[in-house]
Length: 305
Image (cartoon, rainbow, N blue to C red):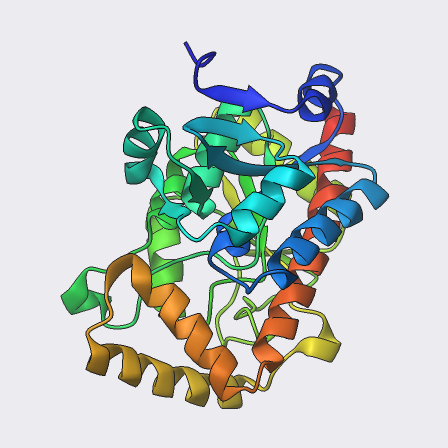
């Protein structure tokens, strides 16, 4: 059934068949998150970090209507510089695939394709969530719904601080998604290690993460888990400072009528502008850190299979 649609690189396919650890990576961060060539350099470095920690990277994207788990370096370069790559979430997949278009996968669509391929661990920057003002706009990311239904664990630096973090956690609780902190009792807020909100459980080793994930899925509990990994201390921004920056960016987005899937790219670009580019370097470093943790968890999970 999946044969005409899903394509895995030889490296990824062989690793999965052999029960080796594999880590999924998204492509929206390549096509819509950073400028070229920084985006491609970062994507290739993330793959290198995963390999250095004993796992196989599977960067996921859609090219010519094919769902690809394991983009080649040439395909990553294409995703990084082509001007017309669509941003693809769950609802967009059928149209993009049927019309043989290119698409960069969000957290939600990366989870879907990773699950189709049999990949259980996924490293990203930060998840989408409940946007500020969602009580009137109903702007809630599809990432949260996907976490509740698709059995892939997502390693991230917490919820993006442009979101309403409290409501995002309430939504995840309602959907039964465990929020686990890597060496922290507090949910990190992407650029900052602090948010003022607690995780469900603090976990201190990759082995323990792997045991919790295996137990969840062995019990037939559907959905994934959110593993929150604080940005490295050296790149963390002051929580009050970044909150003020985001307030300015949100005000500008509202004034310009920015809505829907354009909101996050606009806000992140505005934060980068206001912080003089510091946020871009912070973003890159937290992705590296998440990739390392994801590889370590994938390695431990493969030992339990």
